[in-house]
Image 1 (tube, rainbow, N blue to C red):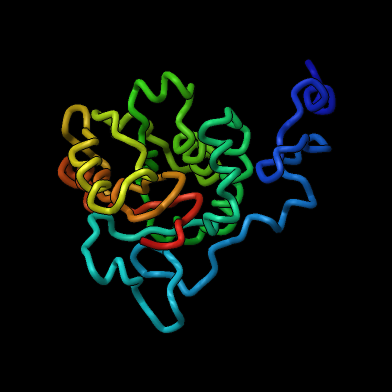
Image 2 (tube, one colour):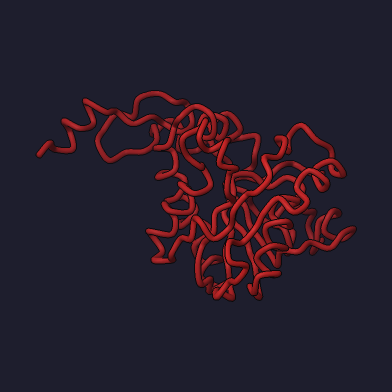
Length: 234
């Protein structure tokens, strides 16, 4: 059996920030990069977790429209990890999930436990997009965090039935139309009552709203979310 040092030499890990080779076995990020991802610090919107001004309970977006999810939080400011997320999604850097899963548990674990979720459900990719990419980054994040917290991950509970256009290319109205009825529940019956949804980025919340719509229509009572990063605003 190969030892950790030999495996590290043969299959060196990549730092999720600079994408350089991580030095020692067991490390998942360069020491010089530890402080580069910026944690999303309070005050937070009490609905979506986006940054707000001091003394403001809800961000403008959550004051102006009603979301279908109940509440959520993000780990990082998007601009500090944008390049990392791009490589994680499109560059085959699956190993990033272990570092980010650890970070989610360390900094958002208390929030997650307070929700008491029955299971974690990752936002799914359409089968054609997954076939091209080879994996679903939201599922990798969900499994990395769920394993550490002892929360089961149901990666096939929610199915993406429409191969929608990338949300980043659309405005708010287009995003809402783009994702209408994009998700489905095979069998149309959810025994889980409290579900925590995982995704990589929160921008307007449209993706999470549509996931919550499908889950609640099938029997879920509460749907929360965790994302790796949060966009700067609507």
